[in-house]
Image 1 (cartoon, rainbow over the protein chains, first blue to last red):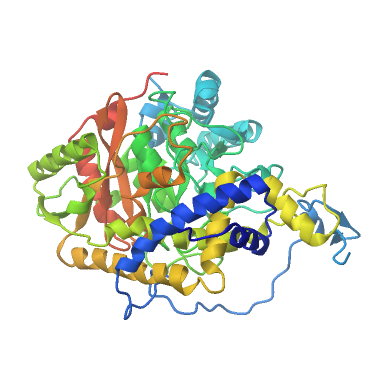
Image 2: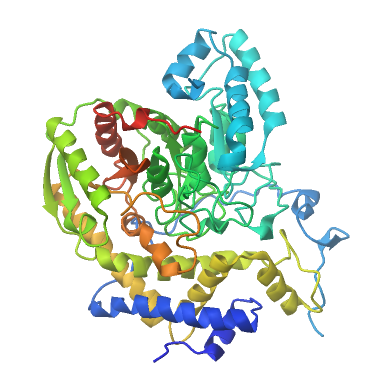
Length: 96
Length: 485
């Protein structure tokens, strides 16, 4: 049985803000299904009482002094922006 | 004979005695690039004009007797996911085709402090996702030992450029083997430092709990010099560790008497080729002769590392790559009527297939209803994998095995099936999951293609890895062989 459907793939693509074609939907459905079924071998392991690892070193919150510093110049910040106007980044309309 | 057949320490002496100039070194790089770059295709961007003028400035310093550190004037290549101020940085992706960074990564700043000369930016698999450099949006770098073969990845060009003599050394990054695997395939030395040893500020993030920047060099000694220069805590990277940086070069004593080596049976078993296995068994004989002892051990959760890695790294990547949305930098589509469509279309046009696949996998494993079954499960298995290493390091100083199951494969051979491609990394991935350091050093050839010996150490014990690797290198000739181009 397939572990992932085409509709799920379309939903995930929407969550990831990725436009995908019908052809890509087919391809990702097949490939993600393969990778996920491969990943299900992890279920062989009993991890009931195992703590998850998100960071390998034993580090707690890292604090620093709160010292005000100068920000980057606006021209620098906008240098790589695809579209800007009046010192601000411009994007297409948010509402239709 | 290339100038780059000399070690850093030898070149430094020549500069010091004014028998060599920085301009000579920089010339050597660009001349060699002129000769072989058509074949190898290492560079995405060259920094020739600035490098040559910097060389002149450094030569003036030599004239005034101001040669300082060991790396003064040494020509280096930098992987293209490490940002360089005013030098285009693409991470191998179309989405950053015209990206011109406004700051330097901490490692680049440290190289400037050490007065190295940046020759250019090196090709890579897009956002470091790949094992062959075939996932670059720009070009497929080739293996200098045989141009029909891949150089490995994702730091494929970082290894190929050193092997081809285009630069003296380079920086790569390693998330699941991306320094060690190409170093093995190209017959050079590559080290993934302990997680936290080197600042990632300015490294374009792939999987933040795994990524590390590290050196690729011709010799272990050069590697130790370069790691020393880039290591240390950084206020700009809260994951960089507050741990003293020792003199790694001082650890190269040549003496490994009494060293206790563990050889995991999983690293010589199923899925590992005859040639890789035999080269490691031969290497163990060399290490024994030098006074080390070895025993077989088990890292019982090794076979789960690949699945764990793909779930975790893809999940982290899906979050990290959300910043590429066409708003603040990078490519933006022309075909969108509103903001959401602009995001979706920009990302569809800007990312390649492998990057999309991993964003999809990661988004899926983090999504509501699947998080516990996939992402969290993988985090728990990671704990078990990490514990395997801790158990072995209770009793042994280093772990030794092959870097890769086979030598380099042919271009185009594995592009159709993602899972076959991923299997290249089965011996390097556990090291990233555990956060420990690992090196690959040349240990043999199979059909004219290099093989690598992987030496893995305890957290922050790069010194013992270097000592072992250096002793092995001094007792063998593999590192002296160069590809004919």
